[in-house]
Image 1: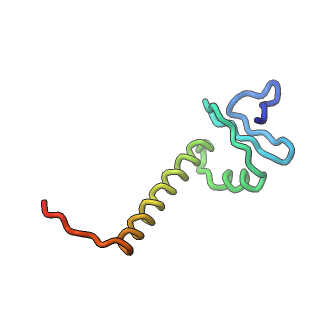
Image 2: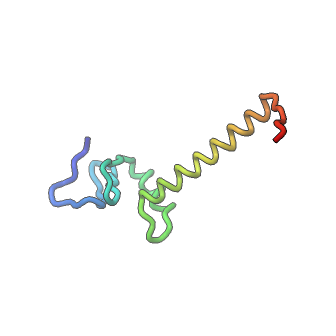
Image 3: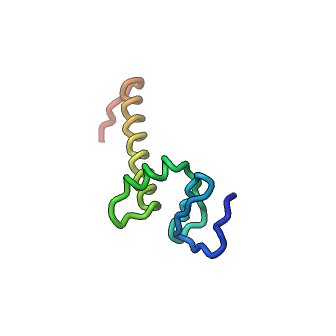
Length: 85
């Protein structure tokens, strides 16, 4: 696991061996990404948005996309029965 350089505080983003390490505020984990991925993520952030907030938003979006995909698959492959209430 990559270590933060001495004197670097949490919430820092630094460049090391062609890899960006993102250490989000109050995080306990680091994510190592390629420079291109870091640049793409940086370009997706809204002003004032943290990487953690961006990733949370992306996770929620993916969960919704998967739910819609599952519903469509079920509708296409399963025989649904109406339940009277």
